[in-house]
Amino acid sequence: MSFTKFSVSALALLAVSATAAAARDEIRIVGSSTVFPYTQAVAEQFANITGAPSPIVESTGTGGGMKIFCGGIGEQHPDITGASRAMKASEYELCQSNGVTEVSEALIGFDGLSMAISRANEFAWDLTLAEIYLALGAQVPVDGEWADNPYTTWDQINPDLPAVEILAYGPPPTSGTRDAWVELAMHGGCEELPFVHAGGFDGDWVKENCSRMRTDGPFVEAGENDNLIVQRLEADPNAMGIFGYSFLFENLDKLKGVLIEGVEPNTDTIASKSYPVSRPLFFYVKNAHRGVIPNLNAFIEEYMSDDALEAGGYLSERGLVALADDRRVELQDAVLNGDAMTAPE
Picture 1 (cartoon, rainbow, N blue to C red):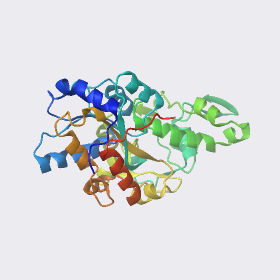
Picture 2 (picture 1 turned 180 degrees about the horizontal axis):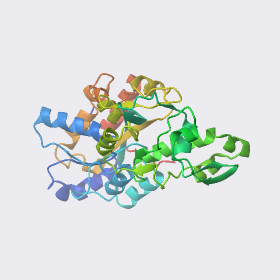
Picture 3 (picture 1 turned 180 degrees about the vertical axis):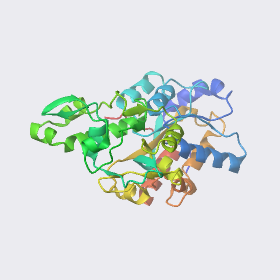
Picture 4 (picture 1 turned 90 degrees about the vertical axis):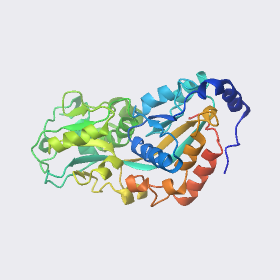
């Protein structure tokens, strides 16, 4: 595998940016808080193996990372961004308008969007998507009308649930985790409501009316640092947190996963897609920086290595659900050869 497959436009951009970009020694990476621990693990492994400066990895959120990444080429702009969803068409257009015309997309594996609670909470939590929506959606059915959410305790939604206040800490709107949670959990739960079935409402109605999280207290935006959510769950045994499975995996001594539709979040259920809230994880490489930013090519090689990505590799040990072997090989060839992504639909 090699780094020789570049288009004429990428080579032109590389030549223009070479003088400026070469002034920076460290690789710079931004993006998703969910992808952050995987990229950080690769950065540590890379530095240990090569002795090169460890890449600077910042947790900016997927949306924030895309904005920074697509700002342009040259040393003042990052080389890679992590994402807990695919790049949007609007973000691709932003990249193109700022001269970032050659980008490689890497789907590195899969992750589950976990709801977690302290192990000090002894209740066996098992929620349906509809119950999750009724707890956290800004508007819900009330006496046959679509109205502001009145529920304050879990037993008001289902008498079999504890009579404790609804409190969930989760990601802000700039986070890819938030985007994926809304699409997979909130829309999925809304679609399960009898009100929606009986009303004959379609997907467009659901997207317009079921995308907003509550702002009256039971849902709290906790920023891009998922470790802060873990700390808050330790402090309040009745509070729940929403984050990528990797953070639950790394804190299983303190937290336990909330079952969704009877299914526990773990690597097996996420890989089999039996766990209903799972999503792919990505990173994006600015091809104009390859061969310009010192050690960037070698870092990409480490990220694409079997040691990192295969089942049983060091990223799977941190909670990443690995791609099937054939998909992994296809990914490695495309990214190492610098294949540029096409415009998202």
